[in-house]
Image 1 (cartoon, one colour):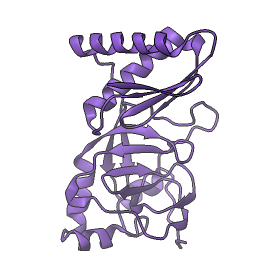
Image 2: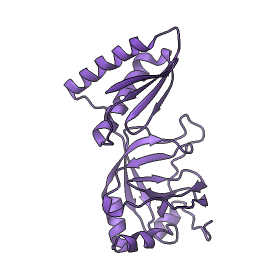
Image 3: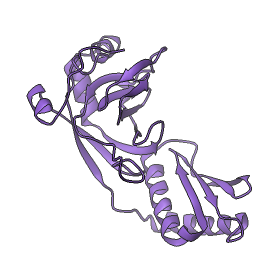
Image 4: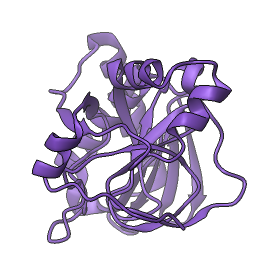
Amino acid sequence: MEITPISEGTLMVEFSAVIAPEITQCIADFIVYIQQQYAPYIIEIIPSYTKVLLQYKLGTCDFEQLQQTILIWFQDYEYQQRSSITTVHHLSVYYDIEVGPDLPVLAALKHLSIEAVIEVHSRQIYDVGAIGFTPGFAFLSLVEPKIAISRHATPRQCIPAGSVGIADQQTAIYPQCSPGGWQIIGNCPQSVFEADTYPQSCFKIGDKVKFDPIERSQFLDLGGVICSAWS
């Protein structure tokens, strides 16, 4: 672990240089601890896959105090190997060229059948490692290398809400219609964007996500929409 002052009232806690499920869980537990014990002193907590940025109120605590507190917590965490209760989100996905225009291209590039791509993508349980880009957008890892693929060189102007995409070894659901360059392989009819809450996401760092393939009729019954054109 490395704790670094970024600016007056802001510090960065780096838990590892490598993305791993145990690091994601550690960060999730750390956030819970900070929120429970130091809420009056903290302005904002911004987590990522391996780091957490903390902004704190000047005059209520200082860098040295927080550094010492965090180091003691981490030592105790490693010793006890504590973990919080993990939420697993089961999300339905319709995998088809109708809603996943990049599905056949990915299959061809990886020398796999479309069915094999679907099986590989849906059998994994993913970790929510970061939330950002747009409200409710959760970065999920890790996609198996056999279906990992880079982003499009030129992003599309509009990705429909619910689109499930892959970018390198990350996967995600677009919570709203937005521009994006991820390789789209399906669509989830369940909303992951909660406009009236803060944060505007059904996910939190450390949660897990499992995609469950569904048929076209189920997709439509759940409120899924087939887009006639992609831009």
